[in-house]
Amino acid sequence: MIGLVLLAGGTSKRFIDSIINFLNEPRQKEIKSAEIEIIKNINSQIQEQMKINKVFLKIHKYMVWEYSVKIFSNFKDIISNVVFVLNPSTFENHKKIIEEKMEEYGFKNVEFVEGGSKRQDSVFNGIKILEDKYIDYIIIHDLARPYIKNNDVKVLLDSIEDYDGLTLYSVPNDSVAANYENKVTYIPREKIYLVKTPQIFKKKAIINSHEELRRENLDLEFTDDISLLDFYMFKIGFIKGNPLNIKITTIEDYIVLHKIIEKEKTE
Image 1: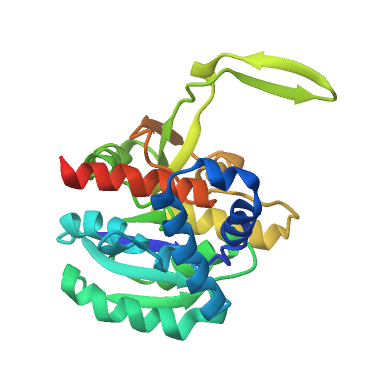
Image 2 (image 1 turned 90 degrees about the vertical axis):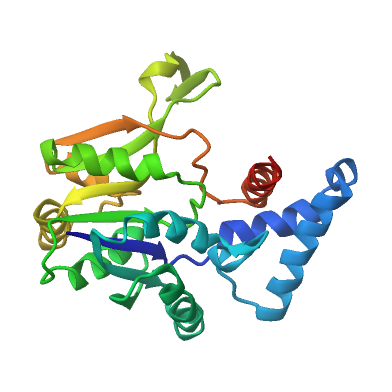
């Protein structure tokens, strides 16, 4: 059986800042009025609530977080436990919203925990709830990535047995260069992996990695969990996945996904 940790513990600060900057820039005159309406609608919610988490905004019919849960619900027969990691400042409000929806998606064992100051702290809080559950694997997913597909999940499930951790990735279409001490070096695109979630782990490997990081009290920050397993030399793997599995970080990302989902619904 599998445990599922869903991350929604961020503050969405970069997202909110991007909206404010977007609306204050002259270029807003150059974009379509429909896009301006999308932004203004979100901006009004921010002004009303003061604190907002982007995964609770709507894209068309559903909230952002629901798109991922809809996909995972296709695997609910093997997902025995679900943990939502939520921002402490909006915990109770968002917990209530999720509780009202999760039964509709067929999940019964749903638990909630507050996130930490760093992503790795939030993940640790989530996986610790699963430590004593009868599961073999743990999937970790950022709910700010709503455009996942069944095959994204299936390929991870089918391949994890030979690894301690597996992640999806895509490759860039642009040329890629790195600046090392003011010296720019071009890197072949095929050598660059854009790492995404969901990621899947053997339960013991992911819990041991996070516990070891805490025991050593290292001043290191990991932006995903595959990199943490790599740091502790566990066996990891990379599977090429859907390149449109975009993480909503800025309003531009939101608009792109809004258009992708809108086109999909009209086809």
